[in-house]
Image (cartoon, rainbow, N blue to C red):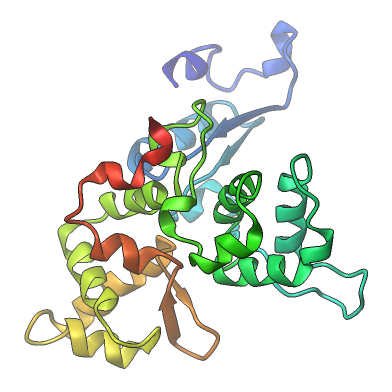
Length: 259
């Protein structure tokens, strides 16, 4: 960051030294350094106003950097009725597995797989990689199991090689208070829950109601909890409950793809 910032005097037009006037800087997976990335981005934008910065992160950073867009799961149902219409989630699985297997005759099974994975692109990519060697009906019969959703791509960082590792990475970035609340939510008997139920399991005498609601709001911002359709109704993202309930298991249980 210092090298980029010190490349020219503040305010100087980047085009004066022959470089393109408009440049794009991509800061990927910035969720573990929110303060440092935000500060660096604000300095760069102030000193080099024609630089464009794209930041990807699993949690919000600040609105002061410009436009913030939340990317949700892919739709698991087609936008239009008709045999030729495929849901975006289904299209992703077909595209990622096309080199190894033809799933054209198994579209209902592919659609069911996408529903179970909640349309989460990374989970769908992991599943598509498994489909190279495991028939889709076998993958569905196992859940699919969390341990099956992994990659053998060693160019990825350890926490990017499995869905369990990816979720654990997000959980590890939480404070102790957030983790305690998430464990209580994971222990609830219902898949869907309301704010009142969250307060019941995490509010007095455990926490003041306002503290519980603030912590819960942060869990939603961190994409571990998601709206469930109804007004102020929520559910855990797929497999979050499994990861939370297995936190006492050695961490390498989620890192099968890291070996």
